[in-house]
Amino acid sequence: MTKLPLKPFITPGGSRWPLPVSKFILDRLARVGQDYISNMHRLYKEALRNIAEENNRKRPYCRTRYHSFEMAVQKLARAGLIEFSGQVEPSDAPQFESWDDPPERRYYQLAKGIKTPDKGEEEEIPGIDEESRYTLEAILEEEDKIDTLNWIMDPHYKVYSIARLYNLLGRMDSEMVSGLENVESALDTYQNIDYADEQEKSQAFDDIVQLIQKVSLNNKTRENKKAILSQLPGGKLPKVGEREVEYSLEDIIEQEERILALPGVMDSEKRPASMKKLRNLLDRMDSNMIDGLEDVENAIEEYEGVSREGQTAEEYGEEKLEAFEAIILEFEKVSLKEEVEKDKKTLERRTKKK
Image 1 (spheres, helix red, strand yellow):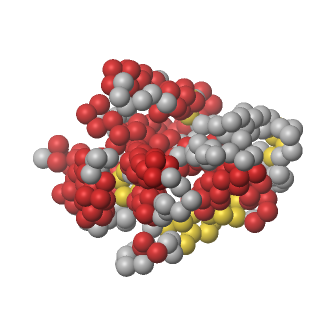
Image 2 (cartoon, rainbow, N blue to C red):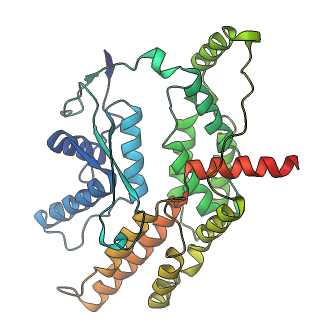
Image 3 (cartoon, helix red, strand yellow):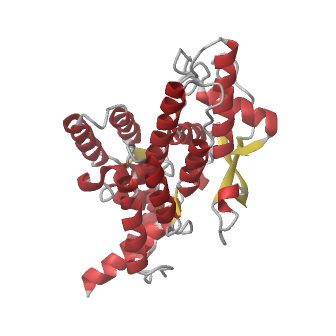
């Protein structure tokens, strides 16, 4: 059994975060057994609204963005406190009714042996079996992700690069790879800088790129890889054939260009026209190839659901603008799916050989 202090994952709430995100997630999963991220995020925002009403606040508490909430889920998963339950189902959200293949929802549950934490006390959690973690397949997969980290960052497309980075970090194993915490810390710093400060934003982006170059397999993982390879004939990996690809390079680039076009259709001074352009663009984006579209649709639904009832014209305008900007923030997590990224990499490599 491994002792894990919960303090790093359950931080005290203040006026900005009166309800710790990690504690909310753990409590929710303890009560219902399993749930998916977007539903927990929706319930968390409802809980914040209720707390604001109880405290007689005129304005609601600042809401955590989806990708921040998702990162909290991934941190808890890497800490061994929660895990993927194995249940996947298509989204039944109204905006996807006409889709032939709607986005999937992945369910999470408390890890075996975990109970709801109380006041930051230590919980005993089952240790991860060393043999099942350090397989050659798992090590090579982490190596491939590290390699991907080093080419996804493009200073000309910062929003898209950050979206791909969030997506990739959420799938990497911090017990096998060193340097991830520094990248995540730099990523948080980048997100807290206003986009109006272009110079500082650009410097923070460069800092992330430099820290990514220091990400590598940790000593224990390298030792395990060396031990496994020593048992293979010649001490080397056997040559394997090229992986099969599902999509053409032309189709992948087309979808990638549409992802890059997302920020350009949004103009806060022309919101109705922007929403029409956004809808037209989303209709041409393939959810089988792209992650994050469901969250953009959810943000659009929240924008359209903003009501004038009980608000002054000024308050209504502020809430509508905030909801509009929330849609733009969701663009930061829209990216090609992992398998599509691999297809692109394979196809580009084949093109270079020719």
